[in-house]
Length: 176
Image (cartoon, rainbow, N blue to C red):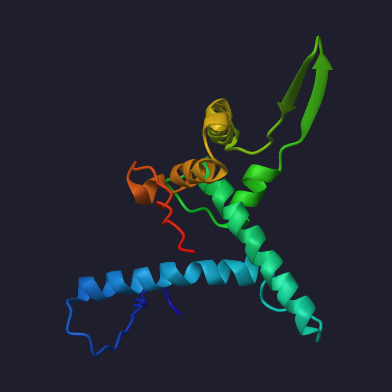
């Protein structure tokens, strides 16, 4: 190829939709967003398959992987509720920080040294999370476990709830 060669790149989309091109492009982005968690589970969490023919163990590992993914996603959303962060970036960011625990004068202190370039942002998020859990602990005795769980979910999903707090469903009276 010479320097005078002009290279063009084309993308062709064939659809039977009658929507405008911008609407179709948005639908395509939304579809990709809905597929990303499955891609993440397969490629970053090892949910792509297991090497045993034992169906019981395969199901157990699949459930364990899904549970770990869900808990990690919830923790990352608590740290930054405004943005989804995939495991490939969130794990090194939030897990690669050696800590030292010291005890003196009846107090325990945890000193975390974060080597990442985003250390200031991570520290800020972790401090905000600690403040949230401290306030939750202060009111925990007044709340039921379900109400505490809804407070945690409300913080993690604040982007989608637009500041509203989730409320547990009202228990219906049981009939005997």
